[in-house]
Amino acid sequence: MFLPKLSFLSFLLASSGAAAVSIDAHYPHDPHTLSGCLLQFRIETLLPSSANFSTAIQPYNLRTGLGWVPTALVLPHTPQEVAAAIRCANKFNIKVAARSGGHSYGAYGLGGQNGSLVIDLQNFNMLSVDPKTQIATIGAGVRLGDIATYLYNNGKRALPHGMCGGVGLGGHILHGGFGYTSRMWGITLDTVLSITAVISTGQILTITSVSNPDLFWALRGAGSSFAIATSFQLQTQPAPSNAIIFNYTFPSSTSIPDKVSLFEKAQEFAATAPPELALRLMTRTASFPIVAEWQFVGAYWGSRGKFNEVIAPLLAAWPADTHAEISEQKWLQALDTFAMSSIVPPHPYNIHDTFFAKSLTTSVPISNGSLSSFFTFLRDNSNAPVTWWVLGDLYGGKYSKIASKGPEDASYAGRDALWTFQLYSVPKGFIPPYPSDGVEFMGRMHDSMTKVDGSSNWGAYPNYVDPTLAPREAHRLYYGSQYDRLREIKRRYDPEMRFWNPQAIGVE
Image 1 (spheres, rainbow, N blue to C red):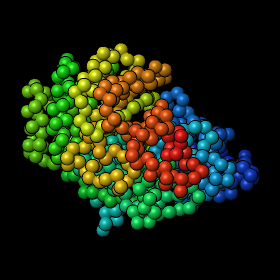
Image 2: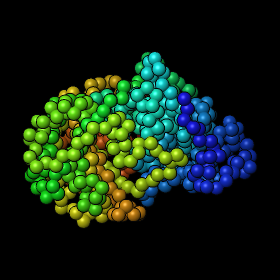
Image 3: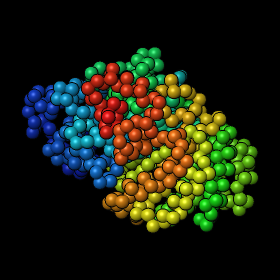
Image 4: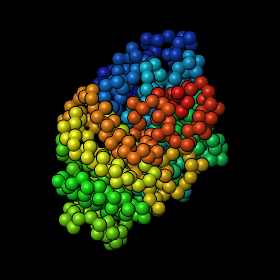
């Protein structure tokens, strides 16, 4: 089955409200220009002079400095058209970037620089499930909320994936894909059986663990550096019949030592927590009143009785007056709860934010000193130049499915993570522009956790890309010991660095 296809005309109308103008009316089929090359293959194309170009290239993150201007944006419908566009880019030595949902924190779907060729994958919107094998075939341009609802409505199936319904599958799955079922099922890229992709020569490949195993390894963790993936075959799971959604809130007056103790108790509990449990620390500045100032939230994929049994040791270690909110929800209802709105994204999609975020991962328990430093920084900076919040997700533990595979399975380097934190900030009052001193403040917040005890166990999550990182630092934090093999595969499959962003594999 296919989702309703967004035609080029409707794309233009949805983007700007103006009538579409045919590129053919303005540009001759001159093979000596990029536009002429693209037109030879009759690929839907927008150029800087097109009436709707500026709207079409508007990034998800509207923070100043991310408004990259590509030399052209194409909207292919088939892998063959993707291949033709890449060959045109090769002919004129132009860098190429893919955009699926457009949610890159650094707007890397627009190239991360001016002058790239952007291949927009919104027309790769196929969705189907084989009723015998329960294998889903999904286009790279489908958004997570549409995937979740389609799978559930066609056999009560599900995948592990993130909680923002507007994120596109392509970028999400090629760099990880964490969600509240990941400790039970793994991350999104763990579900991949095969990938249809176009490499830098313009060759179309079906990539599996048997055919092109080196690319199969590289794409699952660092995919944007190696190919344009157009569709995936993914192994689905039976959707849980119900979820126990929980929220344990602590007073804003909780002292720093008590906050450290609360987290350490959760950390001890997490070491042997069952895979059916998802656990997240949420804390925020007082100017962000949507959630409580200090709380642990999450889900348990099982019965209420079993949840009570599982959570009992943690509750026994926490204060007796801990405020609890617990509800039992069905699968799609739970996804809406996690998304804090409907998981189904609007169509056409025109949602934006103005923000800066940093991430950190750790493979070992966070030390008392690091926790104390971090929570003290948060307390002492109530007059921050930004509105911020912190999400600390439990990834690991003895029984986590994420850690069940080794580094030889995929290039994704975060399997040994115990915790992954996202430090997210927006302008005060959510009113742009983002302040000039916000990035520096968030850097100090990050350092208050990581620069205390000299530990080398810190990393970062590539789906929370930080465009302020220098390439080598990004490679170290995102890929760790996997980077050398990734660099060697990049040299073989993309020696001209056709697939490029400021932190791509091979960028020095």
